[in-house]
Length: 205
Image (cartoon, rainbow, N blue to C red; front, side):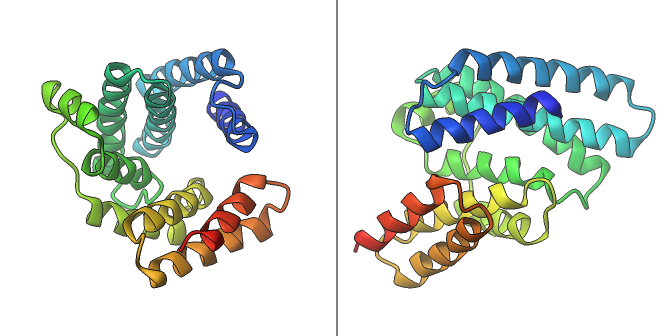
């Protein structure tokens, strides 16, 4: 859990700085450590609840790694990590269907495949990732944002961004997204990412 959270903080800081290359090596090292640690804990778990918790963190680390790889143009690695993330989170949900937080990574996976560019779709087909379902993904992002614990705020942020992408000419969706991010901006006033989102969605018709 620790390395994954530390990597997440660095990723948010990179986003705040608008610098995709910020501390890239440290983020990669932390995520590798987080994934390895979670895999060991999954194998050593004495109960299903403990195993589910570690599968969630394994999926989280792999999901962040896929995000970082895609951000830097490493589509094969991104696809491989995304597939492993899906396996881990599906195992978690199979053990505990009430793990709402586990659904976020699966929703992101579905949404990304549904809205991927041509090259990413080609890679996905070649390695057997299949397609995605944007509508179902949006439903789950929203639910995790409402009912999740560890992943609640990230789910809200991702859902808001997806709403804007899906509803470029839909005022109701844009206003829903602005309301969600406005709440995040109030809760985390020192995070400039949310303020930039609000400014951008105000300017864009």
